[in-house]
Image 1 (tube, helix red, strand yellow):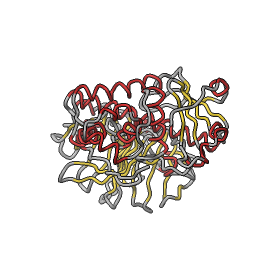
Image 2: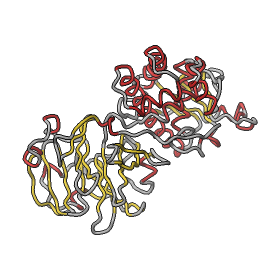
Image 3: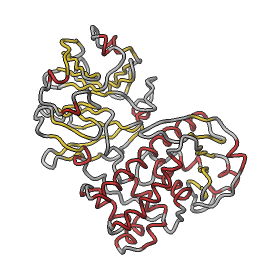
Image 4: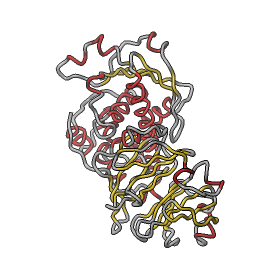
Length: 413
């Protein structure tokens, strides 16, 4: 719903925080939110910025003809034919959102009070959120918003995308219904270009991780976990199709994966790896700290040097990337152009990336974003949206080429 009266008091008040992400999102302010709600909305704000940035990149690829099949099908599903005119129309809406969302001088206010005043939550259709054109305030029904999943077709993040299209894209609510939105697109009905839910569903099914990984690892059940900003995604890698397929219920906020940890993962993590020794666990690092997650029961944070003793000085203040080869128990830690090779958590040798992988492409020689074993023998490194197979350096390419489609979702409103 997009009717709400402008309230100067909302625009004048509250505490500010300045999150950052793939690009620096605008500041956010709160009205009548608890500390817990503020923390959650902060995560949603960052996650929304990642999705918007992912949509912009996908639309760029569509415009120049480099989009993968999944991206073309997603556009067709929600907006019809991917003609240059249609792509530009959709791109304009996301550009207008980005102009405000990535303006560090702008403030987006989250108001949890006016819904009580207007008693919207008590209406039969019970709107989740409200906003108005040009006013960077989103009013939320806390009772309905808090039960939504973090990401998905109808979720916290997609709801904020929906409202941002009202604020910056001048959309309206022709329909919330998934089936109706898809039917309009199939019929090339122009109503999709002014319908907020069409953009919401498109964003929800456009992969937000398509340009780079912060960290990645694969567990002993062949689940690949990837982090981007404050999001974590679980995928299954299909070697036959050379694709990652996102599992249901993902992406999630990293802070929801590590709810009891004091690790500052609200802005993402530096590295991530799965270890089978001495007890199966995931290791998350941020700066010079590490937390081990034993079956979703995180231990206390400890310094990296307490877990990896005898590390060279260059690695003691943090890692760029980390991975463990499950059948040999060897682990690899990178920092800039250096790599430390360990047996489990015991340091063995330090050398340069070029010494370890002599034929690695030039762009990877100064460091990796992430490193992981997809299986027993396939070791990938990623850098700025590119990947290289370290076991076969002739096999490299663009990360988005390895991204499969998001799960089809038929949920309706």
